[in-house]
Length: 260
Image 1 (cartoon, one colour):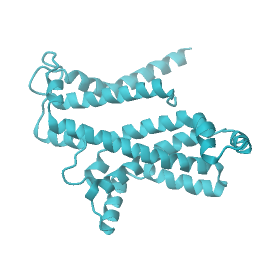
Image 2 (cartoon, rainbow, N blue to C red; image 1 turned 30 degrees about the vertical axis):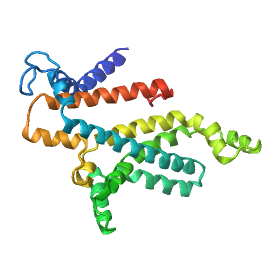
Image 3 (cartoon, one colour; image 1 turned 45 degrees about the vertical axis):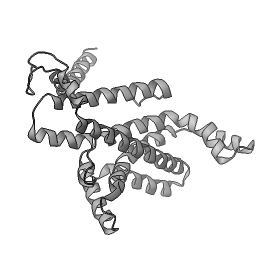
Image 4 (cartoon, one colour; image 1 turned 135 degrees about the vertical axis):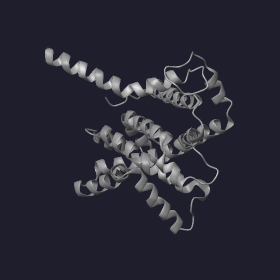
């Protein structure tokens, strides 16, 4: 019992230590003063109003949402198909596919971005049309969905698919009526992690963005180089609130439960 209580206290201290910087940023975002200080000099929502009326920040926020949505959708399709193939392939082939899908997670993000930078310039595309940026975000998010779906397929009863096929259902009908409902929590949970990772990505966006394109993390970085007002804390806190809202809405509407 004493060991359990000691471990609980230790876990609580560790969590408090990890969450303290986030709480400091959220409290500082309500600062009524003109500079980013803690504790705040009074409480006010003025910097949230400033952020919402700042067209540069709002446009960067919408850009991050669009890129994250497209990257998550693309990696969701690729990752789900790859996980289904891995679950049914021979062990030797499955190991190769698993390693290939995990490479973006094993390598540092900046190295992957540099490799894509050289690759697209060698193709003559460069950073135009946002292709390199989107490819970087897809590679960044792909392992999250792949692992989540592959975990959902552990212990999956493939006889359900065989029964559906024997009753006349085609491959697509079998997938959408049998397979997908059973692995849906893994798909949606992986997509949620992928969306957050893409939305918060900095190194990939910094190296692969086209001229005139700026995601919210990049815009916030440029802002803090010249300004030190609570608006930066308001932008960060707004991002945290949006992330929490996405998690709650996803769990309520889709019935997905995040892995514990």
